[in-house]
Figure (cartoon, one colour):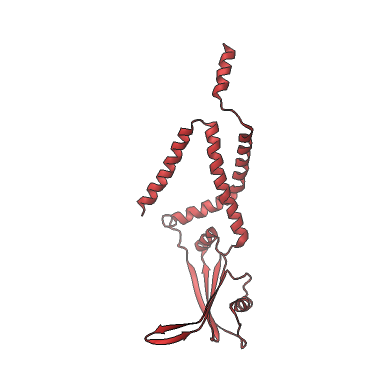
Length: 218
């Protein structure tokens, strides 16, 4: 009778497959890797989501603007202007964006006017932004600077503004890790805790709640 009872118990227990063991190990290590980054994005995301309720000062950028005189020999293209601005304003990073709009003929107040080309150059970091605008032929360039307060700094850090490729790749590892943790967690739960039907029901309920909340806010 005891042997029969042990046999029945072994049939009820889920089979421990070798790949399941490794799946759990990788799941644990990826969870540990994402813990620090997850804490950063979790705290900053919570503050962004509840800053009004918690009465956190709004994200603000202190703005200032100057007209910077160009040298006698003007930079002959947008890249040269960007390099000159880096030297003049002690900017220690490469431009985040350089755009040029060629000159064109426009109609204004019934007159046909030739509009010169326009160059735009942006430098971004989590703490501040510098934007320059230059119309070809001018002897000066307009430069605007925006400095972030603490909450704006957290917001820009959360969004990755001015953080560069290394930050993007680092946050990509967190994003891919979350995808893996979600999928592996489903597999582990299904293998160790029973019914696939229950798992499907919980998954559909979760997705249904998201859809319901989104549609309700439209």
